[in-house]
Length: 107
Length: 122
Image 1 (cartoon, each protein chain N blue to C red):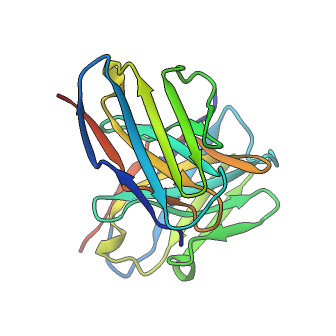
Image 2 (cartoon, each protein chain N blue to C red; image 1 turned 45 degrees about the vertical axis):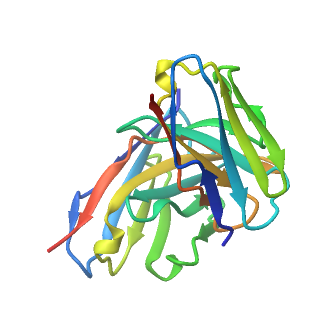
């Protein structure tokens, strides 16, 4: 199975900040990567697929980039609802796998 | 608006079979554009993809769970199900169902159900 490592595991930031989360994979996956946000006590919700395509309704402050083994999620201008945990997920090969998560907390 | 809702026992004894159902509203599980998926989340293993099923009958399971997992569809009730046999404490997790959209070559999991906690304990 493809392993995925997110960094950092914990990120402290303030409302309005720009933050970047990294996702590194054990092998190349072209651009078959998605990002999810999980608010406390809730299910994950899709933000981005195909590395950089925003799901309908997702604000433009979310940007995804990368290819191969290194990917990035950038949030430009943190809002209160963005203090949550973020996961990357690959769908290049089965079994699909997820990163361990990056928690964005209020500084 | 598509909604998914998991249901099933919250407590299962070790060695028994875990059975969960996901009721789909706002869409039909007959729609061939989608796979219907189970994922679980535990403190120890994070998010783990369990597998998926398509209206054609095609299933794909996580090899780490394949010997214990069975998924099925009930088109009359517009729901799909997960059975996991011989459970242990390691199977304690929040179980989610989700719709897997396929627009080749890409897939995405959206929406997800709210999740249901299953505890394995005697």
